[in-house]
Image (tube, rainbow, N blue to C red; front, top):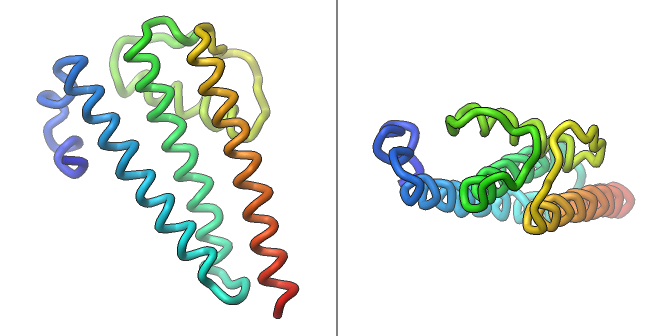
Amino acid sequence: MVISIPIAPKVFFSSDKWTIVSLLAYLLFYSFLFYSVMVQITQKKEVSESVIYGSLSGFLLLLVLATFSFLLLDLSIMDSFLHISGDSIPSKYQQFSYYSLITLTTIGYGDITPVSEQARLLAGFWGVVSQFYMVAIVGIIISKYTSK
């Protein structure tokens, strides 16, 4: 299903129901990829290029997961975010990608703001997850480097 979504966007994004199902499929798929990357990072015995690239890939996968979760929330609860414009999925995806990056890096410019309680909780969740990820990855890399 995940592979077919880009091929047939008119079918999957024709109704809110199919859009939500498609976004949930994306979340599941990218969650599996994130899990796989984390397993590969933690199983390496020493720091190498693959650990560094895997760490970067893990953060980028978190960014994608946050983007899809914000998009899913916005479709489920209208007007959850202030200053999100446009009605099309690609337009909102681009804006939520930016918002996810700003949230996960804890920059927080404030140009897009969560308005609903669910949106504020989701933004807080992703902020905490990203900080935990950074601390865990730095710890893994340092422990692998010092054990050598």
